[in-house]
Length: 89
Image 1 (cartoon, rainbow, N blue to C red):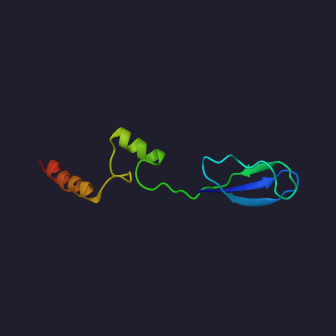
Image 2: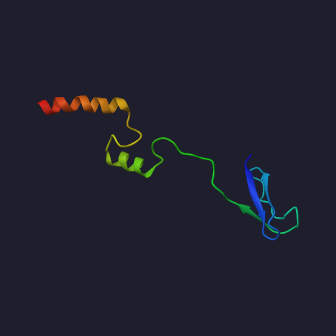
Image 3: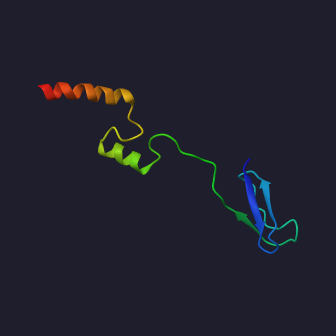
């Protein structure tokens, strides 16, 4: 279950509450009874791999290879070995 941070708009009391996604947001401060506001901060999620960055999707859409994270070392080796043969013909 996620942990949500709350702050009171009247007394400034701050605390965390563990709640389910389906639970309603807290509305009353446990210290003074004032109105609570949910605090939002940075989240602990990182996106790794191809397709999560704008440059990855553009490279895949244009058909360019070699610069994106999705290009494998074996494909670049086969391109390197094919290039001298094509140039020698």
